[in-house]
Length: 244
Image (cartoon, rainbow, N blue to C red):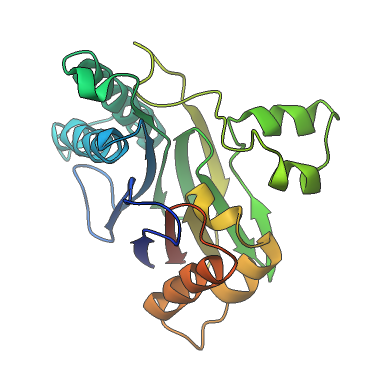
């Protein structure tokens, strides 16, 4: 199993507020770790939020000894809780960081299971048998509207409030992360991304590029980002591709 990640400023934003973490090697007790965080808050606060969240997450994991009995999913959720505490505290210490926050999706693979914890609208997809499935559910206003039958998926992509998320790391003193366990098998491909990717290109195009194994992981990540930029690159773009 191997993963690779890349982030890009896009075509419209003055700075990149996304942060990534990719490790194919053990981190604490976890065999591997992949994180996408999409910061928000204006000025430099978004970048600070996403970076701070990942640093706090890693600090949390590194406190565990190899013989710890903590389950992988509990560690991921605990990492997000620690990230929330760190970002919230920083945001309430310095005026320039007030109201900052970040999305976060974190995943680790153990044997035939992928453990996932997430907050916000950064996504994780699984490509299996050539078909792509969105595994995470967006914590966003338009996602709730789609679920309620008020708008269609197509309308959600262009809705003026499509960037309004309903849950974020660091905006409140506590946060609820969704935890998931999904089966993976040899040949599956995982794509994790910020909304700067999936709002610029359709899921079918993400699938087509990510499963093109004639290209390296690095080349496929570049192709995903280039496709998003070619369609406007309205936001920062981050993508992690994992070949199981």
